[in-house]
Length: 360
Picture 1 (cartoon, rainbow, N blue to C red):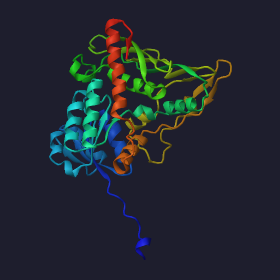
Picture 2: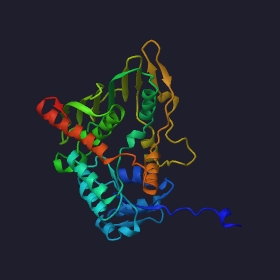
Picture 3: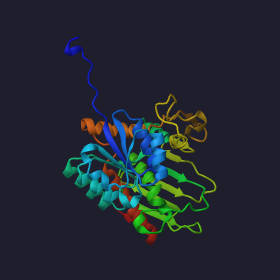
Picture 4: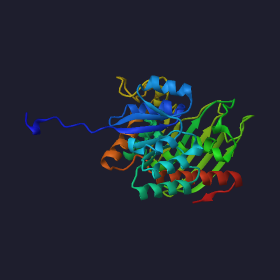
């Protein structure tokens, strides 16, 4: 066999360290990393014995570190750090990883302020390293479907975008996400608002005006659990975004109104539920596919018809990360995009406190 006939050597996979193995790390990041060609889950950072046992059972051969600081001393053995740790740790750990020469994926929100996100972007650029933010809801089935409808002008000129993440959780679950401590970067404006605002900006561009309402309604809760944001985009589109843990009746996930048609869809993308049930991409199932009963409808009240949903595709995020590491392509989400969303969230917090419309 000639050298030209020899099979090409497969490049070594990028070795990933995952910081945190709570719900975000174990249900989302770890399985998606493991399912991505070109990536391998090398190390999980957790000091919790039960979570170590869980990680080892789910990812045999994985190594462990008790703290993230242990990673920086062996940065040469790693190619990527993924932060699925509490929000308050995102900025200091991302900063440490970048200074150690390691590319970083940060779960949303990347920071508590737009200024901090921009500073991380500057550091990553100075180090010539990848920095991206896990805004997985850009790969939801309903969002991908809506993107296609807008691209193909199936709604005419869109003038209003309504989007909801609502839940019925009358009893607080506790933990840092519902803490009133500002250092925790908790509450729904940061938690679900990070998704809703990111989607709105991805669809309709920069925000010009922001109005918001934000309340703490449940006894025992200390962080906002029922909030609303109204955005006027620079192109004139208005986005109305609801996030709530106190909704006994749920509204549509999307209601999008255009000059010729509207699009309405209910329910959540199936991928989170599948991951929580232990299903994995590439296991012979139609990943991300919605049943016909979950399809949204397009048209007017007189002629609305179901629209087949584009399959959701969370694996596309880490596939894009692997491509960015190997080929230098653009990251799936930039830190500056995340900063733009945080600027809206900060404006929403100010608007909710003052009752005023905030101009960006």
